[in-house]
Length: 76
Image (cartoon, rainbow, N blue to C red):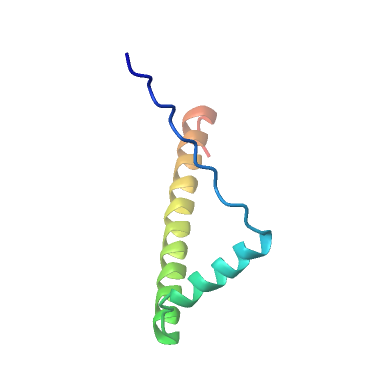
């Protein structure tokens, strides 16, 4: 009868806390950053969508508030 071999537990190497920051800086150097023009265009797009959704949700809220007021309070 053969013995079953015990699975070997591999412990991670101890690293200093400061090595983490070095790794972060190394990864940030690999990032392809958008151009200024692309950043401005995408920012304007996000702001436009946020404003449009705010207006849409505000209009729906106002409409439903008026509807509930008329139904529950019998008039406006």
